[in-house]
Image 1 (cartoon, rainbow, N blue to C red):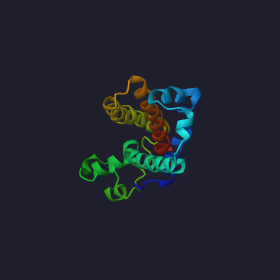
Image 2: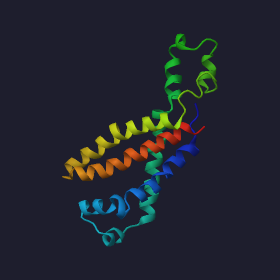
Image 3: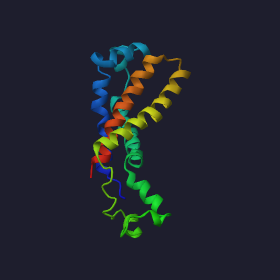
Image 4: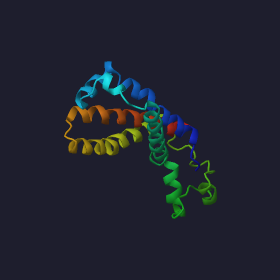
Length: 167
């Protein structure tokens, strides 16, 4: 199974428009800035926005790359069946499957809906606990956790759906 780097790149880039909307002052931006003790003026001071957005896309690319293995089950099927040939469908050849060429499995569960479900679960059960744990030690409240974790749950849902459905 080959990784579709175009799907991963587009999924990484989708984090930007979602973030622009999510953290817009009329959505959650004003509440978020109030919680962190910032204003629009202080957010603009001394910031290298090119570096911030550039690194943001690099980190989002790493997340999207790892989501391939969470939302596309053919990776897991290939791994499992390599050691359990009895689980193969009749007529399937392990060599074709391992090379990502088996038509028996190639499109199983490759829908936006399925990828979105797994992306949502990744956001809720992986990203949210990481952010919440850090927020607890930073002495941030529930609202801070909800805003930031909510962004990643929504974003990873969309990323997962895109990656899974893109063929």
